[in-house]
Image (cartoon, rainbow, N blue to C red; front, side, top):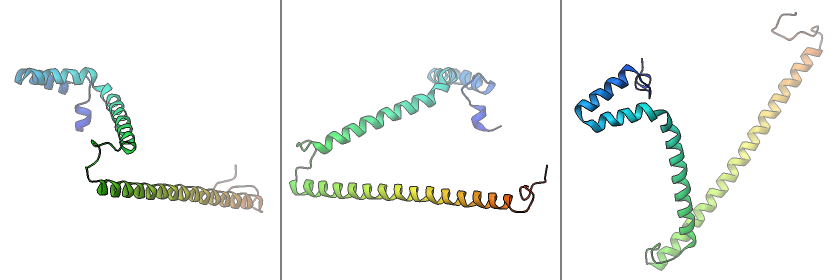
Length: 142
């Protein structure tokens, strides 16, 4: 039995024993184990929702910071701030180019797979229509 099956959020002997042991050692540990047993299934969706919310918040902050050049967001050195902005815009342009190249490569690979599949299908049809009596190579005739 692996550890993930042993400590799943359910009323198993192991989780009950850990809860009782937690209450005996230090009551908040037992309470935490009880909360894990009762609400453990919801932790995955809670974690995902919290991460999505935080990502959206930081993306919004990052977007606001780029447009605002106030004294609280710069270093105070105008030359450095201008250089930093030009470097960030250059890096963003490179990222955009790389994303475009990746999209083009993905489209190329899709077309390559499509052509390969079509060639294999056409070969299958040719072999089937040729003189082998309508059977598929490698399979017995029914």
